[in-house]
Image (cartoon, rainbow, N blue to C red):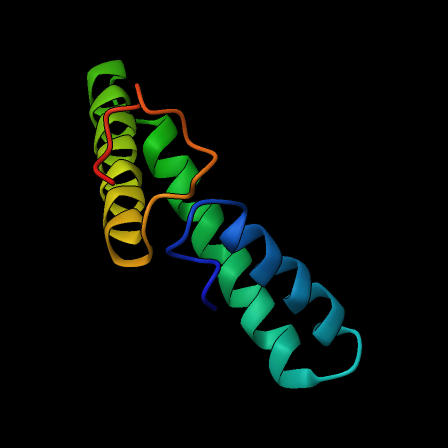
Length: 90
């Protein structure tokens, strides 16, 4: 679950894990069905909105991801391989 807020394919790994668990466990199959229904509803809802709403959602999502990256870098430190011109603190 640590991959969800961190940069990278967080939800993808969780859903892939659910696919694997659903082959063996009923609870995982129910959770996967629940997830499918809600992702489908969300996708349909966003698709029915005007372009400006979709752009606003994209900007808010990008701002959230940027905020998570900044907080993670602040808590864990900026890796040494990041060039000095990148606007982050060391």
